Image (cartoon, rainbow over all chains, first blue to last red; front, side, top):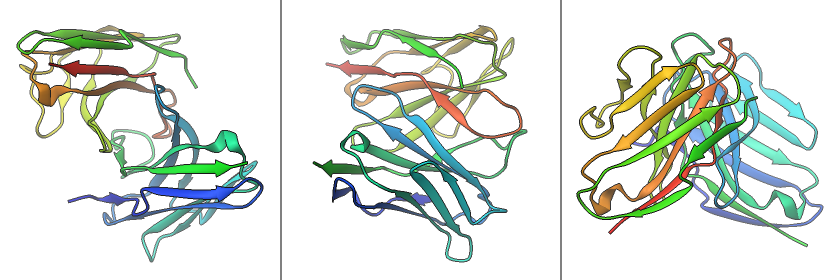
Length: 115
Length: 115
């Protein structure tokens, strides 16, 4: 039973356009969410996170939106650049800090940004 | 964040042998973790490496198969014992730098192939 789902295994966008990566979760105990980017032969790199008390968090070209009622979050990349081409993982945890540290990951979405 | 290194970066091993993977962090961290990413799958937490005590294993993972050491706050090892082809995966260590969030930072991973 996958508690964090990324239903699109791949996404292709043109350079300069918006990339939208989606993630759904089923566990209502999750209240901290993260996005990681992974290049081949490298470990995942932390991108951005959001706590359940917010519905939006922005960091430069990256914005994460959280819809708690729908148990859905999305990562927007604007404008997309060829260097953004990577696998993006959504992750969730039941608490912020303390002992609730366990991250549950989705299977990832391969983003390709075409020049 | 933290700078995390892993050794070896990759290895090809024979069935029935064991491999020890090292994880080194450039600063003292409270929490260290070991993950596995099987081909086409998401990252799965194997265990939390506890400094000075036995690791805490997730469901489906046992100490006899994946013994873990953590002698100090900057170093940990994971051993994959009595390997079979099903153990072919990427093994990643991660750390939690700040106790107030669940953001984890990952090492580059060890790609293991078992023949």
